[in-house]
Image (tube, one colour):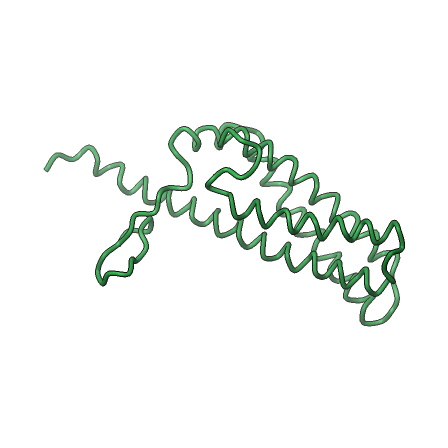
Length: 178
């Protein structure tokens, strides 16, 4: 079984998984500067997340550092908004639509939950609708969804790499006549 296949319910059978990108989409992905932008923003967002998560957990454990934790969550949320907007532009360039391209449909759906929770945090912060402790618990809920969403995208990146490896492995065989 090659890496672009997955087992089916029948023993010994495989079901072909379509590649994440068509040849044309792969070219657009590789040529657009938005791919580099996403490649820079994703680890930046993760770094901001780690720092913020530490500050939020510190506040929850000690009751100290509310301002630093709050500012860090706001910064994390702003970076999230930035990566979502630039990601939608990337998706438009590569797939021809701003969101919900079939290849990234479920990642986009879950991204909206991530956005909703981060935005709810901002609303709670600026309106005072929740206590500082409740705000930080909401931030942790937002961060939990972010971790799941990041894992979805990392999985897709892995699938794209496996697709590319399978494509390259098959390329030399296409020129061979049996």
